[in-house]
Structures are given as C-alpha cells and as structure tokens.
Length: 393
Ligand SMILES: Nc1nc2c(c(=O)[nH]1)N[C@H]1C(S)=C(S)[C@@H](COP(=O)(O)OP(=O)(O)OC[C@H]3O[C@@H](n4cnc5c(N)ncnc54)[C@H](O)[C@@H]3O)O[C@H]1N2
Ligand code: MOO
Image (cartoon, rainbow, N blue to C red; front, side):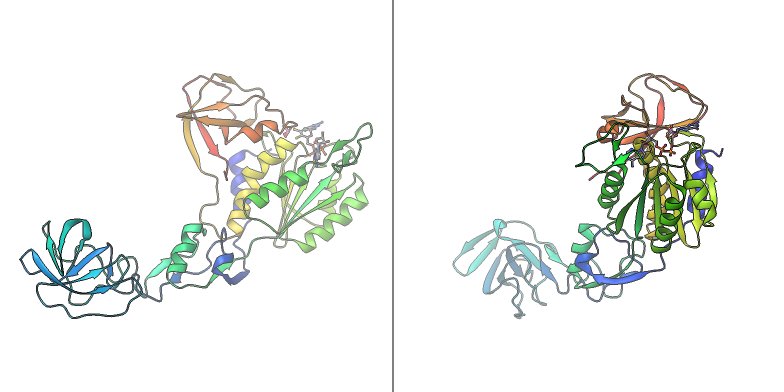
C-alpha cells in the first residue's frame, strides 16, 4: 500500500493540461483558465482623465482663475487654456492638453465666472495619466490565470470580447451497486438511496465542471465491464464509485484490468479511502473511489481535484493548506494517515463529530480537512495541524 504523498505525486505525474483550446466570448469565460496571454490593445485610460468633479486649470501661481467652459464625461472637446484659465470638468471627462491640474469643487469658492482656489495646487493633481492602469502592448492577464468576475471586468474595460481558454474535461460518474435505488422510489429491504452520483455532480458543478453525467451499473461483471469500456471511450475523466474493495461482488478492479486500463496505484494508506484506485487508458484518467460517501468525497478533493485543475490549465492544482492550532485534543484510531472533516473557527480548527466514511453529514458543516500523518495518533489542543481548505462558494 502506498502513502498519501506518493499517491498524490503519481496522480499529478499522470495528468496533463488539456490540448483542447477554445476561443470563447469573454462573458462565457468565468471560471475557465486562460490558454494564452491577453495583450492590451489600448492604453487605459486612453486619455488624461479627470478623477474628480471640479475645475481643470493651468496653474498660474495666483489663486484666481477665469472659467472659460465646461467638459463632461464623453465630451471630446479640447479647449486651449492660457495661464490663469480653468474649465468646469466632471469625473471621467478628458482633461484638456493645456491643463496641468484638476481641483475638486469642494476646494474652490465660485464667484460668478471666476473661481478662487482654497488649497495649494500640485502639477497633475487629480488627473489620471494615459495608460496609468495598462499601456497598449502590455500583458493584461497571463496564460494560466483562472478567470474571476474582476478579470472579466478588467478585460471588458480594455475592449476584449474573446479569450482563449482551456476546455474543461468531460467527466462521467459511474455508480456501482445492486443495493442502490434512485431517490423518489420506495426502498425495498436491503436497498439504500444512490447519493454519490448527485453529490459528485453537485461538487463538480460547484467547481465549474459542467460536462458531467451519471451512469448506474449493477454488481455484475459483464455489465460493469461493458459500461466502463463505453464510458472510458467517451470521456476525459471517469470517476467510479464503489465496487473497488475486495468483496466477491466488487467487479470494478477486474473489469478495469480486462479492458486494459493501466493501474497507476490501488490502495493508499489513508483513512478514509483505503481502496482508492487510479489508472489510465490512453489519455483518459480513471478513479475508483470507495462507495462510502464520505470516503468518496474525501478522495475526490485530495486526488481528483488536483487532476482536474491541472487538466484545465490552472497553475495552482492543490487545495490551499495552512497550519492551525487544534481547538480540542484528538486521538486517531488505526495506523493510516487521516483526513478529518473539520471546521475553522477564528484562529483554530475543530475536528467534527461523525467521521465515519459512511456518514457524509459532517462534510456539509466542514470547511476544511485536517490531515494527520501516519505517525501522528495523539494530538493535544493547541498543537498545530495541517488544515486543507475546502473550496467555498
Ligand atoms: N474485507 C474487507 N472489507 C472492506 C475493506 C477491506 O480492506 N477489507 N475496506 C473497507 C473500506 S475502508 C471501504 S471504504 C469499503 C469500500 O468498498 P467499495 O469501494 O467496494 O464500495 P461498496 O462496497 O460498493 O460500497 C461501500 C458502502 O458505500 C455504499 N455506497 C456505494 N455506492 C453508493 C452510492 N452511489 N451512494 C450511496 N452509497 C453508496 C454501499 O452501499 C456500502 O455501504 O470497503 C470496506 N470493506
Ligand atoms: O477507507 Mo474506508 O474509506 O475507511 O471507509
């Protein structure tokens, strides 16, 4: 059985950035990663711009200025100012070439067509210079940037309408088990509701992966093999839930082997998620997650998430982790490394109740996973622990 670090490294080693690059409308690029640098085609601002409502003037050394006109945002007049002259100007309006300062209106006294300045003037005050934000030809955003709302605002402000992004993978979730029934039906004895499909779809959607589908298969070798073969042929990433342990009806491992999926690893010394499988068939990545819902979700964040991030071209592939003091004593059971559902409060982190891999409720309250290495069984309140931050909306 390999350790967590080796398993994480193997996943990254066997993942690659998508070769599918798409040109999309800027408005549709949210949450995608830029596949090319975006170069600014304009100076921003494109003209010397007033930062205040007030008066643009040519500094004279005196405090009196004659107001000879008005410029509002959107105007394109460029009046000629002589020393001692001013124009009324508004925020966002182009400052005349001959003005060398803008004074805000609160700092002048108006007397008919004259103003009297009530503060010292400084050259270029309240004037945003051409290209202050960015100059034509400069890189606005670099390849690898994960596009957020603010980036869309910035690029729209530069007149950008299309961007090149990495396509996101198409992901199939294959849920296995004779005991699984779709919610909405009445359970017979021995059955449970199928929930990993809905959960993994929701978590993927939350992270911006929209090309997802759920396929259900019974615990039967032939159907498992047929379904997996077809699914692997049609997707970039296949996430299988259940059927990967050692039971007589766990057919996933055998089926994957028989359709020539190359096993990268099977079984990790961790809790939850010991029977995790990862393999490749050509460029397709295949995960066999344990069926227990909390184990499946934990493995998703620790192993599937980095692969998806790498595939969409993101520079940061891992969830952020920080070191925080534990808020209560904790004794771990067993000898495997542990990922524990946890909640950060103020400056510390609390390990939540309900850590069983079959129980997913605590994940809903968790905003982090505390990682305890194999050799770390007893931890005292105040001791610092590795705290992996879960993505939050
Ligand atoms: N003899 C051993 N038995 C088990 C071992 C072991 O090492 N030796 N490992 C245990 C561990 S740890 C885990 S985790 C599970 C993983 O088993 P599988 O991945 O084969 O998963 P299943 O047996 O199919 O299901 C486990 C559990 O989860 C429920 N389940 C499955 N799919 C779903 C779903 N889509 N939605 C909701 N719940 C689901 C299923 O009914 C089972 O209760 O193996 C242990 N056994
Ligand atoms: O590894 Mo299992 O996921 O502990 O329950």
